[in-house]
Image (tube, rainbow, N blue to C red; front, side, top):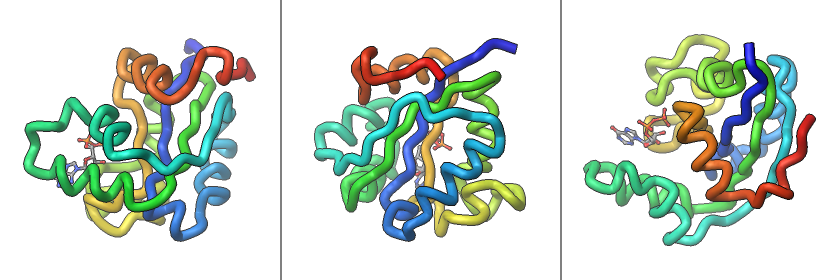
Amino acid sequence: MAVERTLSIIKPDAVAKNVIGKIYDRFETAGLKIAAAKLKHLTRAEAEGFYAVHKERPFFGALVEFMISGPVMIQVLEGENAMKLNRDLMGATNPKDAAAGTIRADFADSIDANAVHGSDSLENAAIEIAYFFDAAEVYAR
Ligand code: IDP
C-alpha cells in the first residue's frame, strides 16, 4: 500500500469540547502521523471556498455558519492508505449512522455538528491540503 496524505479538520464542535487530543490519539493509534497542523478560525470566504462543491445544497448556509462558529484544528495526516483509513476512523456523516468506536459516534452531536472532516478522494486531498498549507509547511514523517 502507498503512503498517502489526506486533509483532516477537527470542526468547531469538537474543538469546543476540548477533544483535539482524544481525536489525535485515534489518528496516532491507527498509525497515521501529523505532517502539518494549525488551529485557525476560518473566515466566511475561506469556509465558503472550502465547501464550494456543496454551494447549491440546502445545507450550505448552515454548514458555513457552523464552520466559522469557532476555531478549527486542521491537519495533514500521512500514512499507508491514509485517505480511506481516516474516513474509516471518522465514521458515517450522520453520527446516528456511525459505527461504534468511530470518531463521529463518540464525539459528534448531529449531522451538522459532526466533529470532523476528511478528504474523500486522493484528488480532493491534494486540493484540500493546498487550500490550507504551503508545500513547505507539510513535513514528510
Ligand atoms: P462528509 O463530511 O462525511 O464527507 P459530505 O457529504 O461531504 O460529508 O458533507 C459535508 C458536510 O456537510 C458534512 O460533514 C456535514 O457537516 C454537512 N452535511 C452533509 N449532508 C448534510 C445534510 O443533509 N444536512 C446537514 N448537513 C449536512
